[in-house]
Length: 193
Image (cartoon, rainbow, N blue to C red; front, top):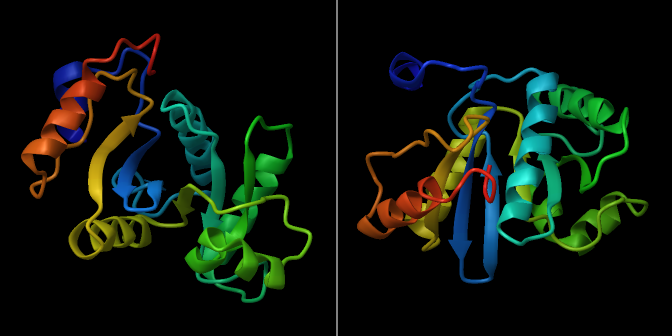
């Protein structure tokens, strides 16, 4: 990311977070923040959720955002849970135009039956399609497992907040992945962001 600001400058833009789209057999799954904030604040997690929802809509998909952590709905007092709960409180301060819930494990995010057992009054129906993690270790780990072991095709990481001027290309990118990133980078900002 240092190269992005060195080469492009900021012009009032700053990277909010990195969003990876994983194309899986059962549909798309978005994961954030995989690269920008290794240990985000609650404010950065909330900002990531808002930006991710906006970007997911640009793909023609209705965002269902899950704040993922080691704890579930306050059952443990740990760092990732505290961060996710604080981010949830920030999101709750204003009306949002997307559905979100947290904090929860990935299985509860992806399986509505598991989530219903844990939190019957959940505001989210159906599986989440956006997973926001409380740290980059978890987000990047899930991204890499899906890519390497579950046959996921990655589009991204998309660098949110840079007006589509820069994105991330990782060493493991495939030719198809590079083509997909080129297509995103070539999309006008008015259409994509």
